[in-house]
Length: 616
Image (cartoon, rainbow, N blue to C red; front, top):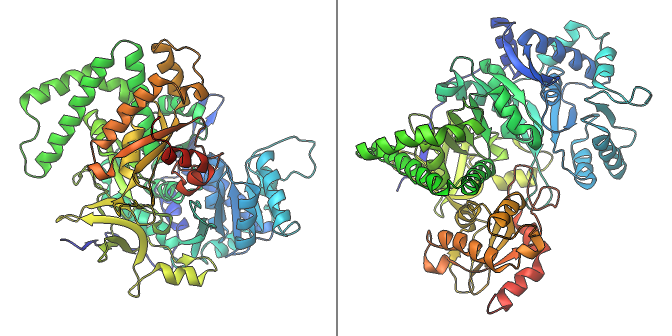
């Protein structure tokens, strides 16, 4: 069995440089290049490298005029938007350290970050975020130590409000030489960001991400994935939270490679933004693909084309699997399969690609596992998903499927400069250019996270094949051990359940119990159309949780999931909850990963009833 896989660094950088050098290099090569796009009066307006750099230096000078020194922390709390990117790069030009705060964070969570990172300035999106930060500053005892700056203009009669424009105006007295001294004072070894873990369990820890982590990832990724990152007129739409380190790492890739980046911070606006901006590649999380697939299947069923869509889906999956087999020395798609695929590529697949804007051919999926079925489905429909694997502590993916080297079901091979190995128990351990410097002001946690020879212990379980492709088999802390001693990985079962249109989220349970069960929440957007199509218009989520037809429909999803595992791992019973698992409810992270412990803790009664009841 293969125990370690390594990919050598493709591009190195001078140790004395930092991430901002990459932007300057792009600017100097072509100042007029359209580096960003902003929405203005319903239209996209290009922002050139020269315009962006001018705005960055102005904001950086404003921060310095407010007393920000090299090495100081500056926090940002906002949804994904152009100003977030502007603030992030400006912080780096001032020699400071960006501390991202998720826009959904509570005052309690923000208070911990303010107490731990001690930022002198917090840039916020709106009055609501400003109120949370001021409340948090009071809890952290930093009322007089934290300046709040609004990224957007507000009421002109608010004398106490400090906006980005005010910040820019205040920096007019800072010289170019002073700014350059601050910018160039940082090296690859210096912190660029303190990123707090999303907190699926316990108090978040601050991961120190260095300039080297961001910069080396950017220059090497451009060489490792040139098929879509170096294509002419490459552009992408960022809709994941910029508070997530992966989104910001991709942001650095974009300004390093001269790739145009636009922002979409509203779920309601996303589909229109995709259609009008027409990105050529996307960064997404599995839940996005699950929702698009489920919605497409639902719309087909409502229009009487359910059988056509089902046939197209079977063909897409079979075609992708055949392509995968050819890559391993097999025969590839048969003539009949190619003909069927060509037919559906005229009738069905273009509409699916149209959801992404019509020009996307490549996507990158991360943050949590994607089901193998969906990966094959989208690839067969013409949208190749490059699934990767990483953690906050690895800055970005430490493994990824490349265009020429793709194995669906795996998370790819090591990124350049990365080594991936398995210990005797199958735990994945990683080392290399993207691995963070340690936990901020927490030497004990840092020491516990690394092996004696410098490998980071991920806590995830995996397998490496003979070609160095990594497959995630579970998470050590998520493994369920039933009363009979059977180890069960809940992730694959949950992924399969979420493929059904009616399933919003699913939590597989069974720790110390006699059998495996599941807590299921309904997808409320899909429930209405499904109910209408089944003669139950107006069916509420509360009623649906006990409706015999809904339960029968969900049983088909459970049966499909059970077909993928052994009998001892199968879901014996399930309970439908009449609540949604959301970021706001505290049951999902901002990247839509389940907070398993929170779900179980908040639904102890339902869990007890699941195991007490002998029948539903």
